[in-house]
Length: 194
Ligand code: GRF
Image (cartoon, rainbow, N blue to C red; front, side, top):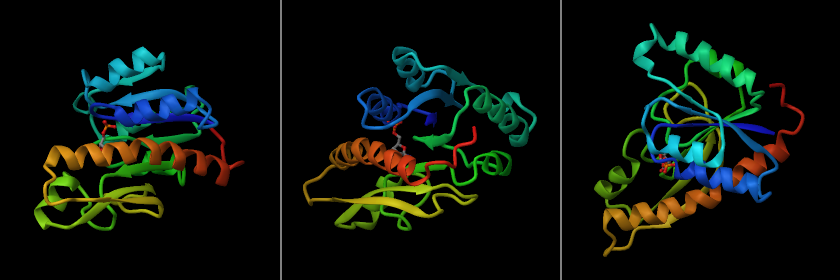
């Protein structure tokens, strides 16, 4: 299975998935990194891992439809079967959704449907919940909506600072995402069509 990873930032989840492909936890290869924030650290990680990178500035295109058509072209060139969003700070538009229907995953740092959207960890701290977590779901046209594939809870202890909660969440993400990608690959065998 050929995997494309979309990211806008640090790329630690890209790293976890790329490592899992290399060590055989995921029966697949990362064939493309798409980054909409030129200069983001994920680009260095892609280079280091030897994965082709497509870096672009959305503002240099006339519309979302225009850059998504370009993305679909790149995805087809690399024969990508599955797209995984890993800190990609942008909604997927209808062109891309249509081209990869049921084949786009996202990871979100809360137990959805709680705390969708930006700064889910900040939202959980603000709400003073004792448990938050991580969700992996299939992407639809909404913001952090779509069928849930996997969830894991993370406790927020009274002494936890924001950085502690972030660290706990990242740690869970880095095992849950590779596991769920492998689960998708097994469950969806045969739907690959590049
Ligand atoms: C992760 O917390 C992910 O859940 C969220 O964005 C963050 C990305 O982190 N969607 P990284 O860039 O993979 O390190």
